View 1 (cartoon, rainbow, N blue to C red):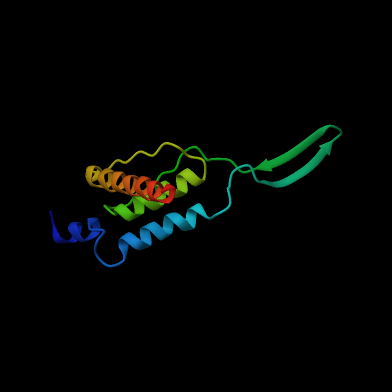
View 2: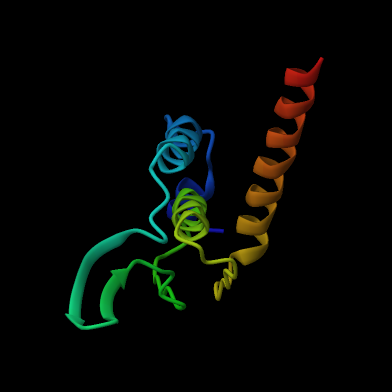
Length: 115
């Protein structure tokens, strides 16, 4: 593995881990973007027009081996009502491992809060 690739995948360098977690918290604190009526008009008797926000259905993001980006994209996708995330990367095993570790950490924190 090249040094530059290792640098991108290593979450222990600098503040990558903390900034990644802060990004998730920032997204979680945003208001729910779905179901918001941004425009309404009565066109005719008993005929109303509404513009309501909804999930777009497809989210395509291309990037290069940056695990913190995967987590941020996943947080944004989930917040916007998307529920399927597909990774087409040769490094996806590393990324899945990081996501798994984040999920385990979240479960551990929830257990501690209950105690």
